[in-house]
Length: 69
View 1 (cartoon, helix red, strand yellow):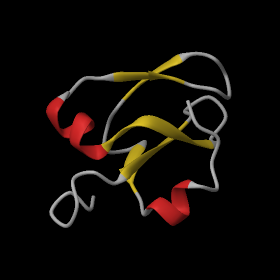
View 2 (cartoon, helix red, strand yellow; view 1 turned 135 degrees about the vertical axis):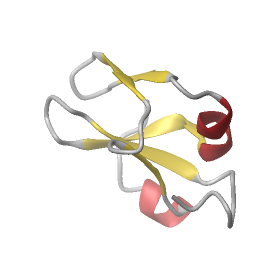
View 3 (spheres, helix red, strand yellow; view 1 turned 90 degrees about the horizontal axis):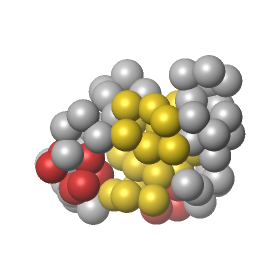
View 4 (spheres, one colour; view 1 turned 60 degrees about the vertical axis):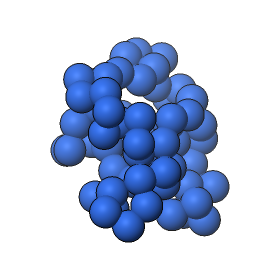
C-alpha cells in the first residue's frame, strides 16, 4: 500500500466473484480509518469487504481506467 506517501490516493478493489477491478468512491484515508468497511460492487452488485488481498491504493492516473462505485 502507498499510505505513507499519500493517504488520499484512490482505491481499487478486485471483485472476488469475477476477478474484475473497480474504483471505490472513497479514498485510502477512509479505508485506513474504517477497518472492516464494505463496498458495493458495480460489476456483480454484491457487497465486498475491504482487505489487503482485494483492496489497494493507486495513482489518480491509474484509477481513471476502472469503473467507479
